[in-house]
Image (cartoon, rainbow over all chains, first blue to last red; front, side, top):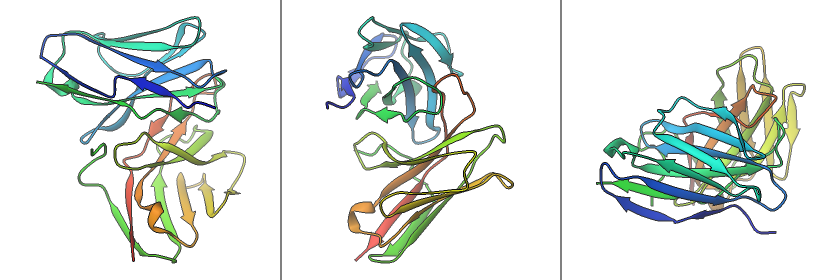
Length: 113
Length: 113
């Protein structure tokens, strides 16, 4: 069974640009969550999508957005990039219920210069 | 590449010894907890979970203990091996509806030969 796949693995962008990251969940999983990981703040929850609807949202500015497609694949977008957005962005998939195991991808390393 | 904090608490143990990693969680309403292992350059890997109606759960070489009175979680690894070297995170969720995990800061486990 294939795991969670995130693309691209590495990305370098310039301040002010926007970026789109992609996540393909484990087959059959309907929930996709996104996390930001930085040395200073650790792992922080961005948002969760379930059946194409945003079900939970963390405390991030509106520049961070996402969506989910009918095949459960998800994308997250960051607009007007700032240097502080440099981080490892992780996607996790789950069958969907609260209290269900979440399986992570390897992440996308975003560097903003 | 590095993906976790540079100044994490570190636990060093001799190969073959048992390891105990501790975590204080933040919300007394949390009802589901997961321990994750993260190796350098990889996403977090699920180790074991426990629900709030349990005090202890055992897996292969790992045991999780939950003390709800003091909001404390621990992960015990028996016969620690070099491959156990990684950063370990506890994660809690208090949202029965969806996937919205709050992660602890992490502990770096170093296994000495």
